[in-house]
Every structure is written in C-alpha cells, then in structure tokens.
Length: 331
Image (cartoon, rainbow, N blue to C red):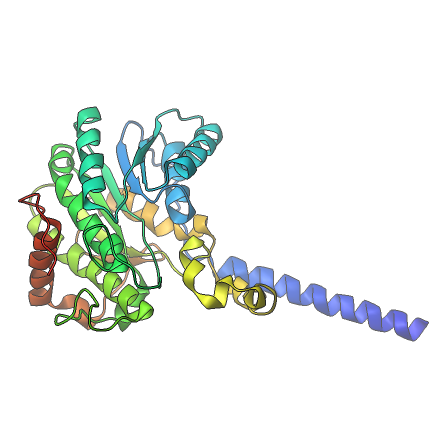
C-alpha cells in the first residue's frame, strides 16, 4: 500500500507542478498592461464597435470605470443590453448606451451615425473593435465579402462619417484593431472581393492588412486636425472571434487540444490593454499612423508600408461604401 500511496503522491505532485507552471506561463503570456490607473476619461464620449463581448466589452468596462460616456455600437441589441447592464452595475456609471450598428450593413452604419449625431455633437475616442474571423464565405448586405466588409469597409464608412465630431472634439483619437495576421497578408488587387477564389484565412489576413493601410493613409489625411489614428494588435485572445476555427470549437479540441493551447492565450481583459494604452496615454496625444502591440510601437510588414496601395484601397473603399455620395457601388 505504501508503494501505491507513494506513486499517487508523486502523481499528484507532478500534476500540481504542471498546473502551477501552466498558470505561471498563462500569467506571463497576458503581455503588457496599461499601467496608468490615474488617467481618467470623465465626460469623454466614446464609441466602441462590437462592445457586447470579448475585447470590446472589456474596453467598454474599463473606459466606463474611468468616467467616460460609452456608446456600445453592436449588431445584437439583446446581447448589447445584457452587457450594458453588467457594465453599469460593475462601474456605477449610468452613461453607458446601447445603439444598433451592424457593420455588415452600410445602411445600418449610416443609421447609427445619424442617431449618434442627434444625441452628441462631439466624439473623443472611436474604437473600431468589432470583427469576424475565418468564417465561411458570405456577403454583407451590399455584396462585400464578409470579413473585408465588417473588418474594414464598415469601419471605413463609420470612421469617415464621424470625422466631423472627432475634429470638433480634438484632441481626439481613433483606435483600429488589426492583427499580427497582417504580416502574412496581401491585398488581392485583382480579386479584392474574393469572387474568383476564397480562402477564410487569406480573406481574414487581407482584412487585417487593410486595417493597417487604412490607418496609415487616414493619419496622413488627418495631419493638423488634432485627430490621431493608430492600429493595434491585441494579441492572441480567447474570445468568440475564434468560433469558426475548428481547432477551438470542436468537442475533440475542447478536451484534448485547447488545454495545451490555453496557457498561450490572452484573456479578453488582457487583450484590451493596448487599446486602452493607445486611447488614453497622454504621451500619445500627437502620435498617429503607428501600429502598437503589448502597449508599445511595433514595425509593420513591408506590404503595409505601400503608400500607393493604401491610396488605391482608399479609393476602392470610398467607391464601395459610397462615403461621399451615399450610394455604394461594389464591383
């Protein structure tokens, strides 16, 4: 019995050591944190897309806790309201609002902006957070490939329509959530809408590269206005964004794979830290057109430095979303 007892103790000890090491690794992989609890956002008006879950919800929670007036721009109003109530209860900030904004519908984006302008004449921080990842091929209401449409085109229109409020509130900031996936991407100039062929990973990477190109081009257009725009990579975060990845959503992976991947994934709260850093840090008031990861500036991929490509993408995005004319034309 003593031999069996010794083996059991050794086994439990080994398991305990592994769990402890996993917890330490998990903590380390959470990355840098925004270390300025003293910075408030009292009275600042903030719009956050996709704020009912994941990184967006944590961003909304943090900004509400700092006193901001937070507009949660979400597709699902029921889930948005549930998240809003939780945020209000947690932060004791009643200035948190749900507004419908489906980035897969340019009409919905325009409707959101129209309502927002009736309620507010200023906007201090815009966080383009919402996104979809590696989903089966589908289209937005206007016929744009969904990942490109939601991750880039919808935010392109939203941002441009809110520029007047941002300029009136200067110094103000725009934060664009991109991804390290942009380093593996290329803009398919010949088939931007993935009509001829579609690969979920390639389409996602293309949309994230579009985010960086948009950020850099917009920064140039906003020079001298007091409005800054920067892109961020939140890290590899355990959120609903991964729901279309087979590695994370099958019964098999839940029990046999995800436990080994878990230590390397950030929590949603940790994923929000770079967004908060870029949105609030006083030293970044005049920093624009940059890309941040773990609360520090990072270099972008070579393809993200192509100014001609950025101008081409802007022109196409303007045409497809009908930013100036109000009439979208996808081709």
